[in-house]
Image (cartoon, rainbow, N blue to C red; front, side, top):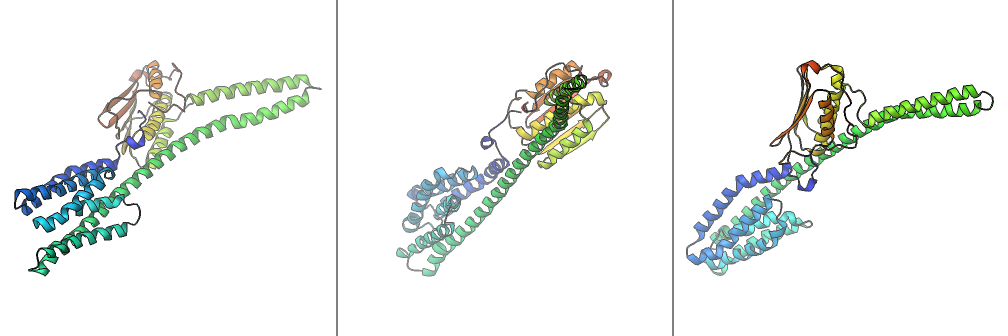
Length: 390
């Protein structure tokens, strides 16, 4: 799968915000229209009150998109102006709705002193509401309740609900970061396993070669034949090590398919991905080596390039199928490591299939029944371990 910059990948948090917008925006717009209808008693009242309602709706839409910073200040200014106009000019007790919504959403943009900022918002809503006494003094208690107390209490409730919503998004963000770290750790563990295999091949050999060369140097002055034998054995040992290193680097070492399935399962589970392994039949061990390479390459691709939540691995007599979700690319990505493996599978009479349907990605390597037990041929240069892209 093609690699994507994390910042531009739609995350779970982004999908939740879009869902929140789709489900909550219609009620918000309906509430704005209803309050305007309730408080509008003349055509010019609508001209005074509508900007506050529009500012609230815009702030809510930008808040769900996690892009409120660009519009927070202008929306706050508009809403803050509408509230005193509604109190003193149009006599609209619901004109506070704009400053209540925009102020509650905008608090997340205040990096420091959020407490004083919230207290200032409450004080502004209450003070402006109490200013209604300047034009209406016949019922002080009603004015203070309708224009000051109720707007302030509702502003506090909206602020509390907004804070809860933001905390929910913060938790989702933390979970996503944890999942990314787990996936990165799984890839690191896979690289460590490769390094361990490389050490197993070369460490002992280099140590033995060093001892044999030292012995040959001591034998050379008085036992040239024995020294020559030691050097020939060292040469053969180094040649064998070079061949084994090439096999390791090109993923040609004999793999145990059962061990590879268990390793893939552990890697996925460590990354927080649900795994279901279905064994319909056992595959011939020789064909299983090539299938193990396909599984290893696919596992690395999923961990590095997908936002998978579940993976299904199906092992049949004729091959293996790996299906994962979490694909964000709209078209089938370019094949790299799997393209090389496709040629090797085809050279052994099999077929490697890669399909993408929506967010679902399928990788399947299948051998005809008559060829399932044949030893895989090395028909093309295989993928290097550092080439993890498809």
